[in-house]
Amino acid sequence: MPVVNTGRFDINYIDEGDGEPVVLIHGLAGDHTAWLPQVAALKDRYRVVAFDNPGSGGSTPVSEPAGTTDLADATLGLMDKLEIDSAQIIGRSMGGAVAQHMALKAPERVRSLAMAASFARLDPLGAQIIGNLQQLLEWRPSWAEWAPHAVYLFVSPNFFNANPELIEKITALVSDESRDMVSYNHLATACIEHDALDRLGEIAAPTLVMGGRYDPICSMTAQNWMMEKLPNSEFVLFEESSHFFLMEEAEKALKTIEDWLAKNAA
Amino acid sequence: MPIVNCGRFDVNYVEEGDGFPIVLIHGLAGDHTAWLPQLDAFGGEYRVVAMDNPGSGESSPVDAPCTTEELADTMLALMDNLGIDKAHVVGRSLGGLIGQHMALKAPERLQSLIVAASTPKVDRIGKRILENMREVLEWRDNWADWARHSAHVFVSPAFYNDNPEAMERIEALVGNEARSKISYVNLNHTALTHDTSDRLGEIACPTLIMAGRQDPICSMQGTEELAAGIPNSKTVVFEKSSHFFLMEEFDKSMQTLTDWFARHTP
Picture (cartoon, rainbow over the protein chains, first blue to last red):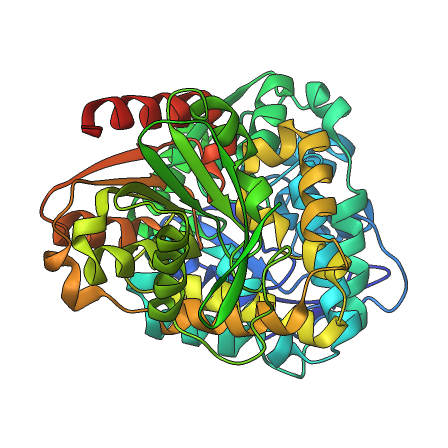
């Protein structure tokens, strides 16, 4: 995979397919591989870029505090390097928060904005949970000990009960001890401090807000806050899911994204 | 409050009113005060008894492992002591597991069984959460940290976000450092080893099953198993709530109990 410098951070990315560009931004605990199913499904029709956020995978660690605006700069820097003038942007969780700042900083470069399980400001429960996850890592600096305290929050009770092998796989993924704890801690703080809520009215691009009914991290409270402020938005609810509805209700989620991209294509 | 010996454990209880008896059994993290609204509401027309479970409040600690069957014996012994031949038995969470064994051991003594946020066997996500809670207590050895890392699973995201004062009260209650840690650890294990899956068909009395749609501790999986297994049962689901629906949807839960008692009291 190629790595390019975008200023403060070097970014590791994949760039697949031809067509109008789509840029995918993952969340706090992931890396670009979170998007592999979407890349595979979309690359026949679009140029699809997915990358490791600063602090994740093969990109530069976040060794000093960084905010979602810094991550937005890094993503816009990546688009510069790839000579992408404008793109449809899709962000999940923290990635959606980053995308909001891209739309605010460079509206001409964001053709549309789709946010999955995201937030413009964490609600009290979301902030509590992210703070708890930071604290657990401070108490026990081991991803293997952290993982069981995190994974049950990501999916609905029914999904957790019905898919033990998948839950084990996700737990093993986030238990990877090579993950950088300092980066995680700074990025978790970036989530807690992210607050673009009062500026969402400035986002003119069409926006899609997707939420999971059982999501405690980016709950319906935070989704409703965004919907009240976004001038040009639609909402899709995933009734059976929590924070990971892109996986829990994969078919519906992919169809929603495909329809959204097609509708907003040039 | 009077304390009576019930075999292995001394039990502290309160009693309100005259009339047909109702016995209220609280859950793992509570004590008899969890039932104050119900004591108040039903103490006019019924004889309502609420106790501190062994390991809670003023009752004997649980300093060695015990089973839900033994706790059922304790509750039946309390009924003996109070001269109660037959009662409506209401159990929430762990109390509902105990209630199931009371119905299995002494069917002639239950006019009806009401289980709230209960299950025949703690499911995968419930087990994960109970183990997480025990682990946090072992790591930190204080209830304040435990409370902050547990409270969010007891209520729905919307309740948490909309009721900051109620959440502070709950955290203060369950964060009370006087609570017996050894009792909690033993009772946590008591809940995890409970299994009436194969015996639900033997529960003969009319049974009311109440559940919170968003409860991850006693999820809809256990609720559906109870409903399928107990022959003479009725299920009421609290759509907006988690484990604490008796509080989250207070009016609906009180009305449900009022109607049930009215219909099933001789």
